[in-house]
Each structure stands twice: as structure tokens, then as C-alpha cells.
Length: 427
Image (cartoon, rainbow, N blue to C red):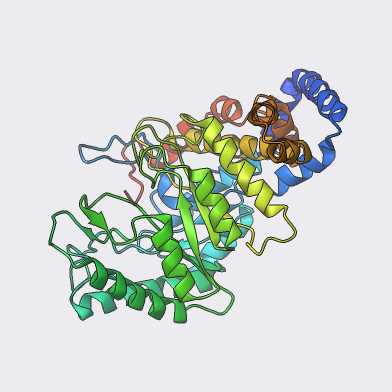
């Protein structure tokens, strides 16, 4: 669909008086705390969260999938949808592709279409967790860890092919998530499986361009339930450390056992200069892929508190992490869900930026846990939504993205163009 940004501006004008009142009050309160509002807005406007191509359709479960209509049927339409999101929030300026779901038929045409929508290409993602119709050998018993060298080479070759597509599109990183593992004791030799995985990853790493990064993801369970080869951040860090300086750990917020202290994981990886990026989502039980901030907004804030401290530490050797949402929606309109997720991420980031770090360190040095909690919760309980809205306004986006999405009947238009039975590629 053709998206007219003048319609956004018209709807913004209607909401502007209320916004101005809220923003001016917040600005005054922040200024009283010696917080530079304009600097905050600048950082928020620069902060971009990549949208995964597979999150633009309604996701499935083992029991079924319920398409909502108007889903993108091609890579071009996925880019169009991300372009709409970026027009609405000015914070979704990149798309992350999954190969082979998103193989471009015409690379130059795809690049031009992305540029016309104001988008860059974030990390490309390989897929060895399911068999494709045209592949020779099965990944049923693993891919990069498989006992059969031919299967391992097939998986390595796939990752090298993904890199080639990424090069053509302008991506600079590869994310590898492996489903490899076992469901029964004795099924797999732990040490041999890990060594084979490391050897396979070395071949992939050596096949990357010199300016690329490799992100090694981890997950403690699913689809296998006795063990996974890369089960936690420590194993990912071990592999990344042995691969080289351009290999990093990627943290998916849903890929942890219950009650894992993810903020401590983040701090440790940043201390080692090995935190490569994030897959944002939220969960109640495990890898639920719920809307970011829907369940644990305070944990999200605490994670960003560690991120901001690491990013603003001049002694830190950790590069700026790559930010991306990773979700598979089943009930909500996927685009509305993504708009909610991006705002939750921006909000947690902004709240972390206003933490009084000098006072927090003094409280820590004085062993004063009460004061430390007060300082953190003062930032978390500050309603910075008007600040996020102002950042969008200054970027030409919508003051209220979901409200505008509905007022302009975006989903209705997409259903009219694509039909009620369109089904996005992916999960």
C-alpha cells in the first residue's frame, strides 16, 4: 500500500495540544533533576530496533495457526510493512531477513524498495532447524553438530550462502541459532557434539567478510528436551571466544530458564566485550515470544540499566549491540504488536538513561540497598511516554502509532490488497 505521511501529520495536529501539555510538564520535572531533555530526545531518535521479517505474519503453535488477513506474501510486501511501521514510529529503520524464507529474486530491486521505505538490512539469519523441500540431507538429528560430516557440510554451506545474500543486500552480520540437541539420555556425546559445532562454526566464521560479525545464539531447551548443544550464554561465550574477535554472544530474552538473572548475564558479557546483540520479547513460562514489556517491564528496565552503563563506559571494549525483536504472534495484529514492542524498548532505554548513576554508585559504595532501590525505581516510575512521543514527532512520525494505525485502517487496506487468506512465509 502507498502510505501518505501527510495523513500522520494531520492526525498529529489533532493530538498536539494534549501532547504539548504532557511534554512540557515532563520536561520541567526532568530539568529540575538536571536531566538534559534535548540530549535524551536525540538518543531516542538515534535508537533503532530491527524488525524480523517473520514477525509480520501471525505465528503458529504446534496446534494451529490463525492468519489474520492481509499478511505479506513476499519479501517486497514484508519490506512494505516494516516501512509502514517505521513511518509510524521512526524507530524501526531496519529489517532482519531469514533465509531461505526471504531469498530475494531481484537483489537490486529489493535494495531499492528498502531504501524507498527508509530501511537498512540488519543481521541475516540462517535456518538449519527445519528441512527444506530441495535439500538432500535431513537435520532431524542435528546440523552443525551432526555425526555425519556430509550433513555438517550442508549446514555450513547454507550459512555461507546466507552470508552471500547478506553481502548483496548490505547486511554486516550473521545470526546462527541451532536447534541441535537431543531428547534422550545417551543419544548424543556432549563433548563430541560441541566440538563438531565449534569446528563447523569456524568454517562459517572464516567465510565471513572481514567487516562482518557472527552472533551465536543459545537456548536451554526446545525443540529438544534433554540437552541443546548451545544451551546457555556461557557456552555461546566459549564458542565466540574461540572463534575470534568478530564473534559475539546474542541474547534472546526468552532463551533462559525461569528466574535467570539476565541483567547479570548482560553485564558479564559487556565486561568481556562479547555482547553482540539482542532478540527482544517477553514471556511468562519460557520462549513465549510475547509483546516486549507485556509481562516483565521492570526486568527490561534493569537489563537496559546494565546496557546503558556499559555503553556509556569509556573503558568498555564492547561494540554497540544490535537491537532486534524476535517474536511469533498468534493472537494480536502483528504490526500492532511490533509497534507496542518498539515503544516498550524505547521506554526502557529512556528510563535507564535518566538513572542518577553518580548517586547510584555512591549508594553501592556505602552498601545502602534501600537508597539504591529508590534511585532505580525513581527512574523506572517516571512516565517518559511523552518524551518518546516527542522524539517521534520530531522525526515526522505519529504521536500515537497504534491509534493512527487504526484510524487510517491500515490492516483493512492490506486485507483489501492481499486478501483474507494471505499467509506470510516463515513459522
